[in-house]
Structures are given as structure tokens and as C-alpha cells.
Length: 512
Ligand code: SF4
Ligand code: SF4
Image (spheres, rainbow, N blue to C red):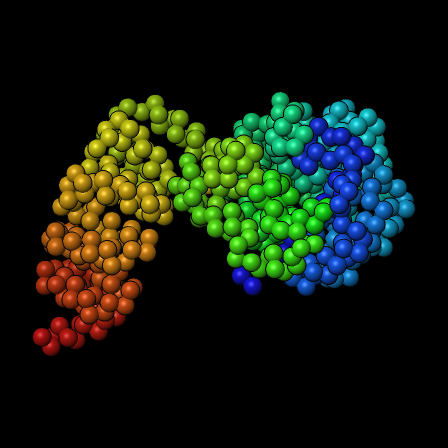
């Protein structure tokens, strides 16, 4: 199986006893077509057979469904660890006992602020009920967690909330950003600006110091910020770093009527991959036609900064739902990213520089020490001030190549060659780039052009051409290039002996 399933969120009902201002699913009453107990148990078996490890039961409010504990047990019986997210309103001794008996590992209660804020977001009296539920779970020795949707009302309460949770035995606290989706779309004045991401990351990082509660950042909080990575590692007890949205790759969402999605947060009709009443879960998961929006996404398909970010290949624009909610398209850049914002601040600083020599000099220096992203930003400013400068373009193409932005590097090299078809760097750069893009024959041709155009002062085209030919198993052609290079420069030969040795042409040359 190409994609190994691991985790899922299962909204077992749309019924809910609250009307929260930030409910992503706009839950009210149960739907008429919700899965029956029998269907739900059949699904538990299918999830187990596919190899899922963790499933979170949510809703709506899962405890408003009479058989929630039967479904939880069904998961457990099929080798899956069930957890549950609840608003806590109905939690009493009987429910906690049922949760323990059914094998639920952790019950997470959604708490969205100190008392006034939480009750404002949810329902009067709900904060006290949640705290009571936490106390009850603590007394019964059950793991309890809290999930907080961070918004403008509660961001300044995080420290006080943390103390309340610790006092009440909470072991894990998940923080997520309220996105303008579902009910929060109607209350979007509560949605945080992207500058809040670093504030939340700082809070999580600072909380590592006292180590009294495990802070877990949801998928929408990141990315590639050193502090965030530390928090992520601590919460997963591993070296886990963000590796892109898992929807349809290692995680899925299940709606109450058996509809299957990559993620319950991305729930428009176009993202429904099938329904387990019509197609088995295995067929939905293993089909080559499903979850394509995420399985086929590449850095190159994402517009804006994510498409040229140094982390883009791994990160793939962070949380897909953040891009969809904040930019209306999963193919737009993710402005709710810590790294995006750090680079945006740099871009603003650079926008104030008008001295193009200074811009180029620093871009060159940064490229020389491997700081390609900053070099790229400086060059973008330099090229804004002097559009067709060949030297800037050459370096810009190189820097983008090093950032694996191959399409950009190709376009820039082609642009240079339109101005100056004998430009050695552009011929070489285009050759290497085309090979990376899979146009190997054409790429090798450009590399050979670069070889023809160069002389002993700049032997890099010989090296790159020979290495590329070797990479594509064109050994005789590689030998030919290396022999030519040796005739031109003994220095090159000395410095690249490993290549000659690899092709065993040292001896050939000596004999000759
Ligand atoms: S800018 Fe985009 S690709 Fe880069 S780290 Fe942020 S979300 Fe990921
Ligand atoms: S859309 Fe966001 S929340 Fe959903 S699986 Fe992807 S990264 Fe996670």
C-alpha cells in the first residue's frame, strides 16, 4: 500500500448540545442518515484491517449519541486506540466509567478560555461543567486533555488557562487556531491575524521550561521555527518535524453518514472521496483516483512564497485547511506560517534598500554560505530595480536551482539565453535544471553547449556535464568530456581525480 494509514477523526454525529461561535462543522441536530451502530462497527473493522492506529471520535458532541462507547470499544477491539473530543457538558461519573471500560485512551475537553470567555464562546455554565469533568477524570485516574481553539478573545489568557488546567490534572493541551470556517466564518472578528502564530509558538516554547503540561500544536501552527520544532518534538517524544498535510496520505476524516474525506476540516462536497455505504474503505483509500488534491500536490503547484520556499518540498505549504480558509484555495501560499512571516519581515527590510551594488554583493555573500533564501529575497529586490541585469539573473537562477525551484530556474535561464545565447552560466544552469525536470536529453545538450563555450578559466561546465552524463549512465560521453577537460587543464584533472578513477580513464590516458 503506497499510503500507510495512521490516524483519523470520526465525527460520529452532527448532534450537539451547544452552539459554539467557532464550530467548524456548524453542528446542531443529528442528521437523518447517520451511520447505525451496526454500520459503525463494520467501519471499525475496516479501519482496523487497513492498519489505522488512532481514531479520535468527535462530532457534534459524541456523547449525545447513545452508542459512542460501543463504537469506541469497536475500535479498540480492532486494534485501534480510540480517543474522544467532547465539550464536556454531559460528562459525569457514568460517562467516565464507560469511557474507561470501552478502552478510550484520552478524553479531551474543548475549553476556549477562562470562564467568561469560554461561556461566551460556548454556553453559560459550560466552563464550570468542563472543570468538573476534568476533576472527575483526574479522580478516576483517566488521562485528560484539553483542546483550545485560539482566537482574539483568549490569546492573552493562555498562561492563566494553563495554570487552571495543571491544577485539574490535565496532561496534554492542544492549541489550534480558529479558522474562518463553519460558524467562525460568521464571527470572523474573532479570527487572529497571522502575527499571533509566533505568539502562540513562544508560549508553547516557554511552557517547555516548567514541563508541567505537554503542549501540542495542531497542524495549523508551525512551521520550521526552531521553537515550534522543539515543542513538536517534546509533545511527540520523537524527532518528528512537520512533514506536510497528512490528509489522504496517513490520515482521514469520517463524517457521520460515512462520507470519507482527507480531513474533517476540509469538508466541501468536492473533497468527499466516497461513502463507506457504497464503497469499502479499503477501495476508497487505495484508489489512485482519491485524495488527489493532497496526494498529488507539489511545491511547484503552490503559488507565492510557499512555491519557492526552501522547506517547500517537505512542508508543501503547511496545513491545507489554513490555505483554503485564509486564501480560498489550497494552491495559495500559507501566510499563517512562522517561516513565511520571518521572510516577509526580511522582505520588508530589503524593500527599503535602493543600492543595487550592495544588494548584489550581499546576495552573493549569502549564496556563498548557503543562505539561498535570503539571497533570493535580495536578488528579487535588485531585479525589481534593474530588471534585465544578466549578472543578477545568473545568480538568481543559481539560487533558485539550489532551493529546488526548478521551474523558476528554468524560466530565468531561458530569459538570459534570449538576451545572450552564449551565456555559459545560463547554458549550464538550464542544462542542469532541465535534467531535474526530467528533460534529460535536452538538458545534456545545454550542458554540452556550456562546455563548448567555456575555457580553462571556468571548468565547472566540464565537471557538471561529466557528472550528469555519469548519472544517466552515458559513460562513453562522460569519458570523452573528462578527456577533453584533462587536455585543457591538468589542474582540473588533479582536483577531480575521483571522477577519472570512477571511470577508470586515468590508466587509459596514461597509456595514450
Ligand atoms: S512558507 Fe510555505 S512552504 Fe515554507 S515553511 Fe511556510 S508554509 Fe511551509
Ligand atoms: S488540512 Fe490541516 S488539519 Fe487537516 S490533515 Fe491537513 S494539515 Fe491537518
